[in-house]
Length: 142
Image (tube, rainbow, N blue to C red; front, side, top):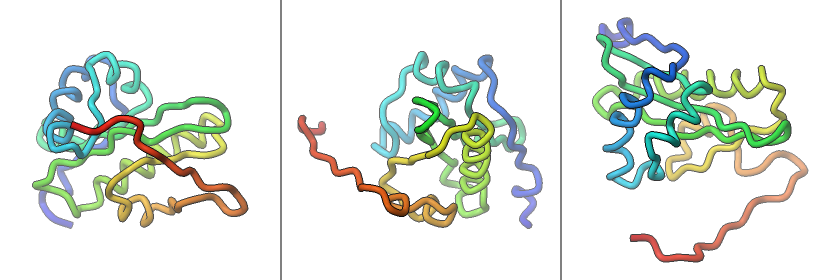
């Protein structure tokens, strides 16, 4: 365990942290690693989210958006690039899975361009014996 790793705290996010989380996510959004989120979007997600901090600075975030008892989505997974590879993202994913389970959600999905972390956490392309989602872009990306 590195010195940084032992100082990292992960806890449930609070509404009071909305602006700080929004600010933390901006670099990931500007690099097209996350979808654009307004501060209002984050405020709607924050109470189902988790924040990783190092020396009281946000270094990670992830949240669960519950659509129905059947389906929820893990959203906004982001970890500060300077401390990636220390298990923070995996722990955030695990907490989101636990959150979905505690709410009785049957399936949790994650839409990502970086599948490795999700595959390590047990996510797969489809659930056994189920159909797969296929996508088409209906508008060009900037």
